[in-house]
Structure formats: C-alpha cells, structure tokens
Image (cartoon, rainbow over all chains, first blue to last red):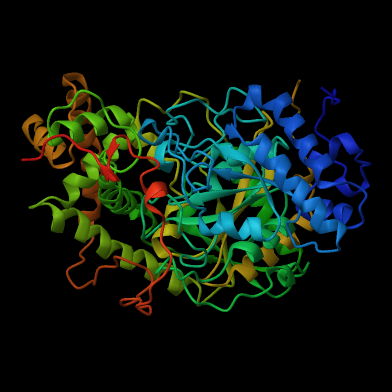
Length: 508
Length: 94
C-alpha cells in the first residue's frame, strides 16, 4: 500500500497547492473533472487513490458502513472508457459516497439498523440512478443515526463515527458519515438526507458545505422514509461550486415520487457569481439570544460583517414562532415516522425474530429486537400523538403551528433576499455528551428544523473555528425554489474567505 | 405526569413493540419530559389557523394507467426472511 504524507491544516488556497497523483483525493469535483477531461489522470487512478485514502483514515473516522471496492473499480473502468471516447459528463469518473438510507442496487442499504442489516435493494434510488447516469462512481455507503434519527450519528446500531477535526467529538448527524468522509477527503463529495438538519448540522460540525434543497426539488424515491413531509436529499461537498454541480445532477421531477415538483431546473452553476451588492441579508433576532455559545456568536457575527463589507445590507428581521419549532417538529416527525416505520414487520424483507409461533408475537419481537432505542422512542411518541384522544391536542396543534412558522418565513422574505443564522448552537459536542438526554439532543437542531417545517432551502458553509479548532457553520436560508440566491451568497462569502481550504490534520 | 405506565404499555401494543420492564420505565419518564416540553405549543391560540400537513398543496398526482415492467417475483422475494413456493411465509394467522 502506498504511503501518503500526513497532512496539516493549511490556509493556502488549494488551487495554488501542487497536488500529486497520490493526493488526488484532496480535489473537488470541478478540479478533478478538469484533470480527467485533460486525461492527466484516469478514473481508475483516482478511485484507487480514494480507496487507499479510505484504508488509511477510515479506521480512525469510521465514516463508511460498507466500501464497494470491486463495484467502484468496475465503474471507474467504464468511466475511463467513456472519457477515452470524449464522452465526459459532470460526474464521470468522480468517486462519491452515499448515505446508507438511499437504495443502491446490489449494495446493502441498512439505515444503520439491525432491522435492515442484510437488506440488498433490488433497485437504485432515483438520485443514485442520476449519479450513475452522469458517470459518478459509488465508493460506498456512509454511517448515520439509525433511520436518520439523531444529531450525532451515535444512534447507529453498528458503530460510532468520529469528527475528523477532533476524534473525541461528534461528526454531527444524522448524515455524520457523509460529512466526515467529505471532510477527511475519503470521498470527493457525498449525498446526505435532511429531515430536521441532518445535512446542514453535520456539514457545520465537519467544516464542509451541505445543502437541503426546497422540499420537492429532489426525488425521494428510494430514500428510506422517515418524516415524509420533511425529508429531502441534498449534497455534502468541499465547496460551493461542487454543491451547484451536484444539484444540477439530482434536481428535477420524478414520476416515481408524487411529491417531487415540476419546477424549472436552472443551471445552478450560473449562480456562482461573486457579487451580492445591494442584496438584503436578514438576520432573525430570535436566533441570537442570550446564552448563545460565544464562539459561535463571534464567528457568525464576523461572517455578517464580511457580507456587509461585500456590499450587502444587513437587516434585522423577526421569525416570531422560532421558539415553538422544536416542539412542533418532534410531534410531526415522530408521527410521520411511526406511520412510515410500520412497514418493518419482518414479512417482506429485513430482519425477522426467530421462534415466534404467532403473527402478533412475530411483529412485536421483530420490531423490539430490530429497532434501537431512539427509533423505538420516536415510534412511541409518534404513536401517542396520533392516538385516539390525543390527535387534536398534539398532531393537529403542531400542524397549525407549522402554518405559523411557514408564514413567518413568507413574511420575512418580503423584506430580504436571504436569511443568515448559525447552523448549530455550538461547535461539535463531545461523544457521549447528550446520549442519555434525548431532549437535549433534540435541542441541538434548534436552528435548522424550522427550515424543514417551512419546506424552504438552506445551506451550511464553514465560517470559522472555535479556539479548540472545531469548525463553525453559517446557515443561509432562501425562499422556496430560490436555491440560486443561496448559492450566490455562499459563493461570494466563500471566495472572499479561506475556510473552505482548511482540512483536518489527520494522523495515519 | 401525563403518561402513566399503563398507557405506555397500550401505546407499545399499538406500535407493535414489546418493551422490556426497564425500557418501559425509562420511556415513561422520557415521554413525560418530552410531552411537558411540547406543552409550550399551548401558549399559542391556533383556533383560527388552518393546519399544514404538507408544504406543497398537491392534490392527487395522477398518471396514465399503463402496463409497465415491475420487479420480477424472484427479486421481490430476494430479501424475504422466509419464503415458500413463490410466496412470503409467515406464522399462523388464523
């Protein structure tokens, strides 16, 4: 196996850093695309370098539940054949990672749950199909909180993923494996899913870019359902340009998902413009309350001043129902989850407890042994809020408050182009810190969940570091279907700062 | 206390879960703490507010009723924990 030089965090922009053959794993999609197109490197070499990188760093990080080495090398050979004939698409020959709650034909899709431990999907999720059609290579499947329920990836039934910046800290969750893999250069980019912040919060914790698009923008076909009115797939990437490239590939209506929307699909790369002069950036006062982590406040405050310095007008706005978002969210998402997860009955696929003589016993044993504690807790809560006598008091009430939260955003966007907030209330917390207290864990999503309730798009971008060297994320929220404004704001910020060039110092 | 132990048992049955003694105790405490937190929503008067169950107001997305290829039987049964003669096999129902 090749030895790869240990890497230290560096502030110099990547474009000026000579990247040799052995370190192609450092590159972004757009950088690698140029090299592949010019035939300076083959997809086989790139894929081999990534597999080597995974061998070197993943024993520490534990981002991957499965590495599909053989399939990846096979796809790389096909990509090289396509490139040889001059047929190169946006992702041709680029190795990517997929969160393990999206179906991949022939490769296990476990949701980090015992109940799906040996499940091999007979079909690809639409997003996986789109990536393959564009020539992308699937390196493997990344770890997550079981069924995407969690904010730290500690709820995985199989292993705990670590933050590449600090192995004692959480990578965030639930797409913690995807975010950690991108941050550790163990893939070029990845897909995550976001029900209440599961792309943006881990992206913030790991110092990478993560976007949850508008609800309905991306097909959910083949994404294992958690909260169907909230779930959305999105990219986790090393920079904003890669985010736009991934969106171009996965956006669009799908006849297999009746909730996907037939929206015009712009070329999101056209939004890669370094200019936000005259734009109004809204800062919701409810997100900057006393008791906020001082380092997050400081870095987000500095980011606001940077945007102001670039010609944006900063305006204080109000999202008055922010304080009700966590309670609303955990009623709606658990209600939807309890209904969605009813399908795991041990009959058609997945785990079945052995030894049951009767059907009811088989259901109960299968589900009790197959689901982990957080999943059971949410199924219980969801079943309770939907049950006879409580439906109006909880579920209907939450749906009404959701109307108010959605209206808050509509009102706010009358006065501004984008809204910025911190992505998470603190930098990545310590492993084990919140596992015993579900309510504290739920509160780590406080800044991200109202976005899912309203169905609007939002992105997290690195905006600084804590004194201990942990990344801090800035959340940029846009009006429904206005991902382009988010991308333009993020790109302008990124190109005027150097946070995206920093990488964790991983030992080998 | 909003939820008594007895109610937790009932909800577990509805959810087709069988909780261990210790788990039932733990969940009773945690569900009460979480439901207490949810009380917060009652600060808001929502009597005149329509509920939002879905952010996109689609109404019945229709498609043509055409015969299309579907998963072959073998693939459909590929992940079955127990099968026989082209069917899923389950314990006695009646």
